[in-house]
Every structure is written in structure tokens, then in C-alpha cells.
Image (cartoon, rainbow, N blue to C red):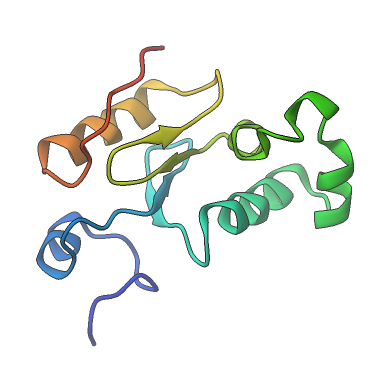
Length: 118
């Protein structure tokens, strides 16, 4: 079976398969999952599952001040970090496991952004 974004994330296989491509989310426990079909949709699904709400109920919970920063709010709701090649988006609750995973991705050469501080 070929390795692609629908497989469980494997750092070595990712490096062998993709060049300059990283679209993942880092879960609360430091696990990496591909952001399929997109970061926003993946975070919505994670947040709905975590909060036990429907998509509409989740949308209704979003405070007005996050209408234009919806991705950050979704990261907070899902306790996850959205990651691209050279950047990441997270809420104030980023934890040591997530930072450790970002460091591993950076040391492996697939993430080129900064490492947030707690």
C-alpha cells in the first residue's frame, strides 16, 4: 500500500514521500495527524468530538472576537496545533508534548517555523 495523507502519520515515510509539504495537526498528546481535508475541517471535527457537540453548536459557541481568527479558536477548542511548512497556529494552551513534537518535526527538517514557548 502506498503512503499518502490518508495514512497514519509516519515521519520517515513522510520525508520519503513529500518535499516541502507539511499540513498536519498535533493533538494534545503530541500525536500528529494529517489535516485532511483541511486544517479548519480537521479542527472542527476534533473540536466537535472533544466537546460532544454538532458542527452548528460549535459554530454557535464561537465568541464574536474570534470571528476573524476562527482557526485559533478552533485550535483552542480541539486543544490542537495546526502546522504548515513554516508556521503553526495554536491557542494559549499549547503543551510540552505538542512543543516536543514540533521540535522533532523541525529537527527532521520538515518544519521550518519557530517553536512556541509555554
